[in-house]
Length: 368
Image 1 (cartoon, rainbow, N blue to C red):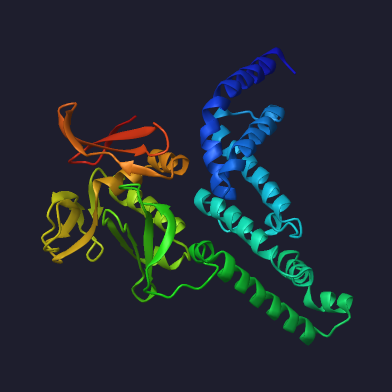
Image 2: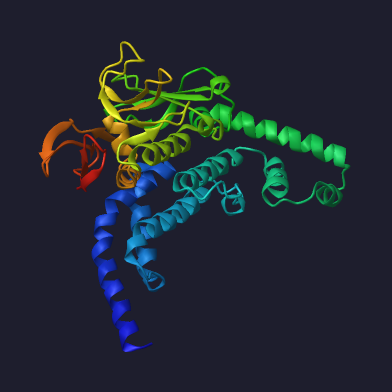
């Protein structure tokens, strides 16, 4: 190892040591969320930090330390959950990748933990059969031969095993299973999601699918916040948070990329984003909107809060602080231009984030 490389490694180690204490509280929250056991979360977070310190030589870039620690914490929590249900065989590592998106990756691990807990409630024979066929992907003919039964008899056993797993999910974990799309939810009916309202932070959001019209709705039963998203994105997801996260990414790309100009959905005419009461939506309060005089139609509305939440920096803050509230909106003069200050504050610690945005171009001037 050259002197320069050694010096760089020492710098990373020193920086890592300074970052670890600041990650502690976030890891405790993450472990509590993954295991649903607040008492165990502290120990699991400490174990995560200990493993990370032992493996610190594997870290070459401090910018990714949060994601690295999150991955270690998820593995630690998997082991803890399996230890609580010793009859359940490990299934997490064999689950197929759902997507590269960080929200879907986190949900993948949470689904796996839930399935581990549900499988533990089945008989050993049923659990082993499901794991061998669906997780280990052992062919039916091969499995039937090893068990000394016909393929038809094996299919009957697999069907019964799936029914037993479904009953275990519906009986013991109905809310979690429905939230993850493991149990069918009636289309058009409101159901509780795992997301805290990002406006008041006091209640879990309610979600509703309208597949016929490609629409997803989210509502807070406390403050009355209502969000509606319509389009092909809503057909690609079974659960609410990944869908909402991708809708926010679309919002960011549409409203932020062209200095406050968007394209009409109907005639492709460039339109300026305006703030006020939309002429095509009587009864609406003041909001960000676009309206095409040629078509006489609107091309989407957004609140300042959702536009702020669509920023990658704020999205990362939301992942670290899932229970937060919107800060009061303020109008200021920034660099000689009218601007709006929006932001969010965590309800579990003192963390907060604020964004200064120009009113005319929606350009972000500052994130702090």
